[in-house]
Image: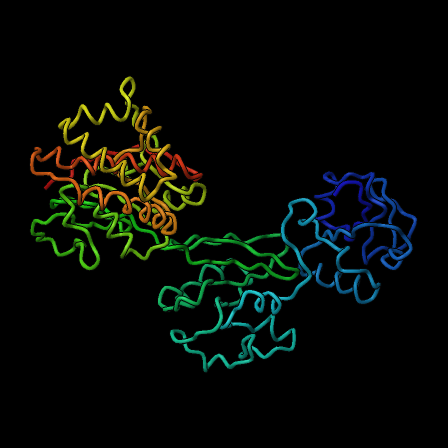
Length: 457
């Protein structure tokens, strides 16, 4: 707001705290409902009565009071003095860019699609709205918690002090409610107590936001996307205890651990001995329904720098807000190229045949990636282990591309002449294909260290 002319309404504690932050050259006058006479000055500023505002030229009136009083001042300015609402803002809006709009709680409820209101005594009584009626005019007693198809949010009640807030979750037993998928928010109302803003408790699985209005704060709990990191294994092991990690058995051998997921349904497990954990990626592509999904190995896990612990759910959620995909730290193969590095690790004939089949599949089915494939294989780094975490949308895009290449390549690869390790040649090329795909597409990539754990039983 450059060059604007301001009138400040309110000369109490908020004004005294903010006065040093204002550019005094922009202030036309200050006013308050308790001004006894005009012509006075405060901090060198002209003091006027509220009714004199209409005689002055200004761009904005900045209200320097708490929300409860601000609501009354807003009504006074718009209804009595005829000031356009667009020219009235709060000191929080002016300095902190905090959303501040002259709307009522009922307006906010309607805009957010709130369906159920469970405790509405003070606010709704004072606004002539029955406390047992929600914003759609239905009686609360008739509301079904599990079967409603309307609305995307539930309003849980009005809180006026810290003691009430501390008890809010116990009072409404939020964790016991079974909301259907249409309900997106859990909200707690909290009247502003003077200038104090109550700090909400965090809840695992929910993001936390504040919405401020004239006469209230809303503490908004939004259900976070479901996330899982699947752990590929072909042997029994000491699995992570965190619910974030889910074991996926990838072997034709019999699995005696009933807690492990298996490649039931649409799968390509018959190719496991050729493409390794990629059969697990395929299964997740077809069956996982989490919004955030990833793959680790029974011995390899992502971690943060300087940590000796595997990635936690809190850490994962924080990273995925900033990045599109999490991968392992790139492996440097210099002075050998990626191609020569792989060739030196397996049977030469198996390498040549696998490279031919993969490249032919790319040329035929994904021709836009031929140049990227050549550049990556002639380069000196790649993201290892077919390990990554991303949104399911990006995960699906990658898998659709990847399996259009490696399924025909693997099916055309005759493994019989080679040793058990070299039989996996197509899988080793698949490991490099993640780098090829990311090289071509513009995603925000975060590299993470890989923690090796001895988890054998």
